[in-house]
Length: 113
Image 1: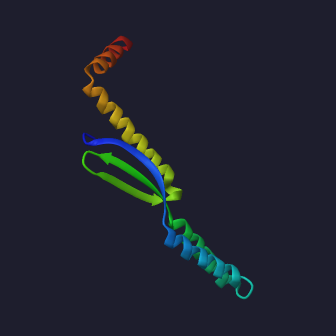
Image 2: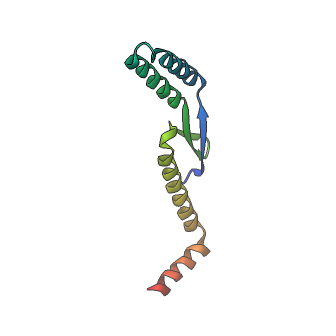
Image 3: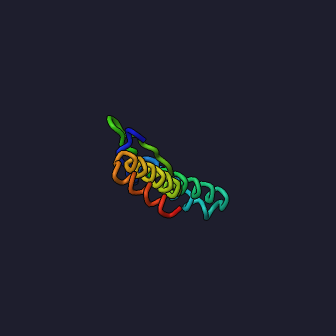
């Protein structure tokens, strides 16, 4: 936590898997008339490839270089949880370095007890 300055979540689009997935999905759509099972397999494979081309990226900004964690778009909630944990840790770490906030919180805890 000492070297982490902030975090950011963004979305990336990989063009090649999206294009190949769209081609597979169209092939599957065309095959549905002749062979339903084969068409369904091609179509599902195409949709899966399209989905794998859309990534959610957690950018952890550190002193010197950034660290990236990429997951498929449907796992965005996990990255949001990770970002919240990191931001909470950073704010707690900042409170320890600011002595006025640290002692104010400490005195508030004593008053409550």
